[in-house]
Image 1 (cartoon, one colour):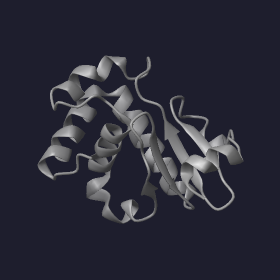
Image 2: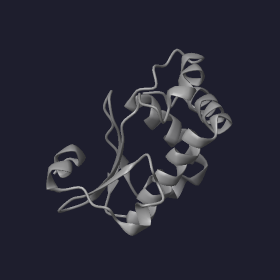
Image 3: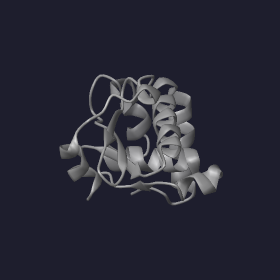
Amino acid sequence: MSPVTAMVAGMSERPEFARFPNVTFVEGETGDSVIYSPGGPADSHLREAFAAHRLEGSGYDWQSAVHAALVERGPLLERFSFDSEAGMFCAYGTDREALGEVAATLEGLLAHPERLVEALAVAVERDLLD
């Protein structure tokens, strides 16, 4: 089942994900997902950071930023997968702890524009832009 299909399986309010106001945790039959919908009030203040790299702030762009922010934590990247689309960031897998790290990273990028700027610079440097 793909992460997007997993959304049909039902959204869950897991206590460990309640501290992340901008991401949605989706519990599926064979795995779980962390979903974020860009382009709303949570990231409107970050348009210039994306525009500086000729990016729109799409789901793919957020995937690149999260990937870059986590690149130094290599083994963590092996514990989940990305499946973003233009209008949605998605990370999925069976390791809820890893997905919690993804959610925390994304929330950190939203809350601290300087972290997003740094992550996008790393994404460009390491050719991680999707």
